[in-house]
Length: 185
Image (cartoon, rainbow, N blue to C red; front, side, top):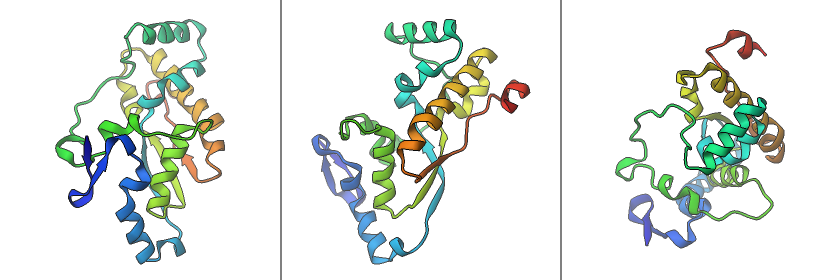
């Protein structure tokens, strides 16, 4: 099966690689000497739903952590309020549905490697990540779960992802807006 990339160029799903998918962007970046200019992407979405299994063990509350992790193994995986979105529909952003199939190097954090692939393709020096689905975590019916999800994500991001990114990734942390004292913490 092929994935349609820019202007009808086809990329085999079996060989899906962000660097190859963005080859045209890389060519344009070189033609325009973007490597000679400091470029910072300050609006970079992070798809934390793809790494729940990595950051949920950081939940501080022992009982909630056990409930969430046990529930995930039983197919009860909806942790955040879902919003209607059509961003990936109609072929507008072709790689979203197949992101999970992209291969990465063993031993490297997937989020860092995939992030740096698109950054390198477009000559982005620094990227400021912010969560995507956790933007709606303030709608969670449980304030306690909102707090736990925010802090678990933030700890995982600051203790594992950002240090592994070699100073190229930064983040805006997810704050539990339903509890001002916890947001200050």
